[in-house]
Amino acid sequence: MQTVGLIHTLEQCLNRMQTVGLIHTLEQCLNRMQTMVLIHTLEQCRNRMQTVGLIHTLEQCRNRMQTVGLIHTLEQCLNRMQTMGLIHTLEQCLNRMQTMGLIHTLEQCLNRMQTVGLIHTLEQCLNRMQTVGLIHTLEQCLNRMQTVGLIHTLEQCLNRMQTMGLIHTLEQCLNRMQTVGLIHTLEQCLNRMQTVGLIRTLEQCLNRMQTVGLIHTLEQCRNRMSRPAAPAPSKLLPLYPFRRRGHINYRAEPNRGCQHAASCTPGGGGAPSSPCEDEEEEEEEEEEERKLALCSPACEERLEP
Image (cartoon, rainbow, N blue to C red; front, side, top):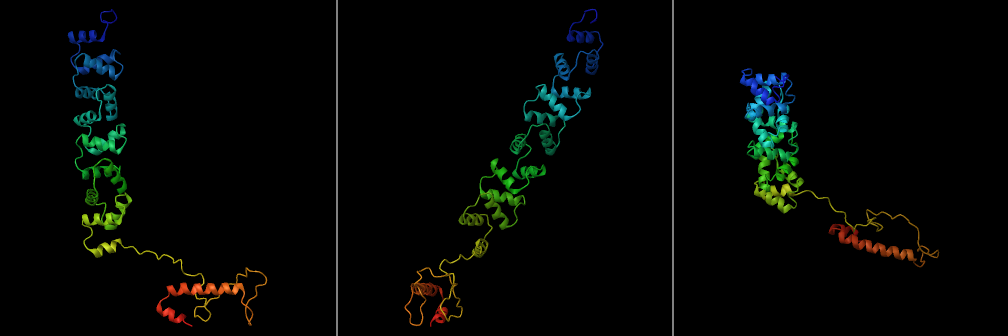
């Protein structure tokens, strides 16, 4: 018919073949159209089948395309449905995939959505899962996120939960972390809360721990809070203590040399005192005064001449 110029379009051809009883089923129709090289791509095929009223819904379309071997995997199916403009949002896509029985669990769904590049961040993933009604509680959400390997540490988990607005107060945060078994002891709890910047002062820490029932007595509180502080070095201690001759711990100061004129001679034998000796006596008196201010009464008795 095409050779003699009686049929010029596919619609005319198809109508003629159906009219004369040559094609009875869609498979026969599609096979005929492909055999006559009238349809070269899936888009053309689907457009033609919809144009002639053979396919009315996406499910029929997808079933037919799989039946004739045009789509073999979910990725191909999803790409085709998006290419043909049948699916515009993730919700539609997920609903379709679930309707057609391609996705049965959240793990499969998430893996598929990540595979086809529809979800790139945890926030997007969680928002989508909540939108389609797959996750209803924080416990489910946290379990799922850990199961699919999106959250590995408590800090990441807490930051995510705060970012997504799931936890607003420290009490909620602590209750959740204890519920999911992430915190077992007070030390872990306090370290974590300080690490994520929830507690900045001791008062806040104590109030929080008492509020959540972790500390019940003052002894527990003091034991938990007290940390042995290193003794601060005293600025009053002399470099060379116990310089008085005759003291049990006497140590002579090293001779650093005289800084005065050459006429300065050490005293002794009735010679007049030199400036060096006068300064040394003044230094000794000052040292003794500072030392006595620091010593105990027993030490003072030992220092008496």
